[in-house]
Amino acid sequence: MKALVVRKDEESGKTSAAVEEIGIDDLPRAEVTVAVEYSTVNYKDGLCIGPGGGLVRSYPHVPGIDFAGTVEASDDPRYSPGDKVVLTGWRVGEAHWGGYAQKARVKADWLVPLPEGLSTRQAMAVGTAGFTAMLAVMALEDHGIKDGPVLVTGAAGGVGSVATAILAHLGHEVAAVTGRPETEAYLRSLGATQIVAREEINETVKRPLETETWAGCVDAVGGAMLARVLGQMKYGASVAAVGLAGGAGLPATVVPFLLRGVNLLGIDSVMQPYDNRVRAWGRIARDLPMDKLDAMIRPATLADLPQLGADILKGQVQGRVVVDVNA
Image 1 (spheres, rainbow, N blue to C red):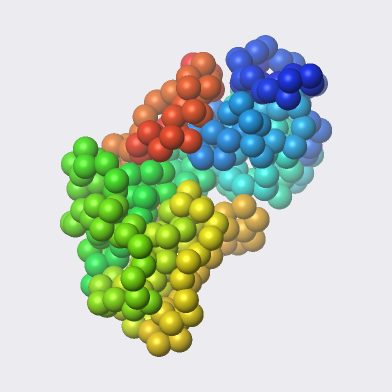
Image 2 (image 1 turned 90 degrees about the vertical axis):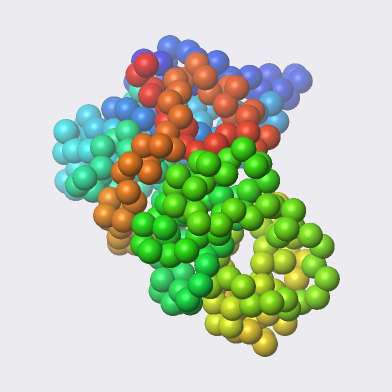
């Protein structure tokens, strides 16, 4: 079978990625074997493919932090050959070989049955990024979304694109933040009613509280942008923070939390409880408009991955890359 394999040179410490032929016995031992159909390209995949090796624990390694496909063999009674499944998280593609191969072996606990109404290709158009976006929207809903525009930062990326489409489909006014003016038409096609230049939000924080503007926020950037957004939230509004592209630091004060009751909700897509994963995928099948999803898709093959891994680290990938591992 074909797989994108990342290897590390022991002397130089440099890594390289190439499509190779591997055997089923090369795969890690686990309870369920899945015939992989599609995977995606996420920021973590770029780190794993890149020359620094990023998050990879040992080599050789097959990246791909998510995948969808069909169960081929199972030692667990919950899954039978022929079942359609999807996997996100659980350090697959980092500590355990992932989705950039035509077969994968994983623990049964890591899988979720593919919900009715989603194909494996659509599931990977959603992927980890879209799954994270839905978790963020659910968190905002659980805390109550105020009246007014909901801000989405990093809106042209994977998480931001899906969050924009979901929020718009649910009837919210969406203000999409982007640093690339050429993405405006794309974001409006997803349902954004307002386009905000990144420079407007990413200015230096001058005071801890600004005009109450946003009824909620899905922040896929973090860093200084998140600090600025906190001071612009309406009273009692929530920010669901999902990304660290802008850095792990938070140059903010406690003032927005104390005087405006702002909620900062951290979203971790990796080790979500099974029931919440099933709930989120069910909501995706119901509340993500398929025409918007199809418009986000950028098709790719295993051979495209080394370049795509570099591109996503540079912020040059728009929408959702869907990798057909059998192409």
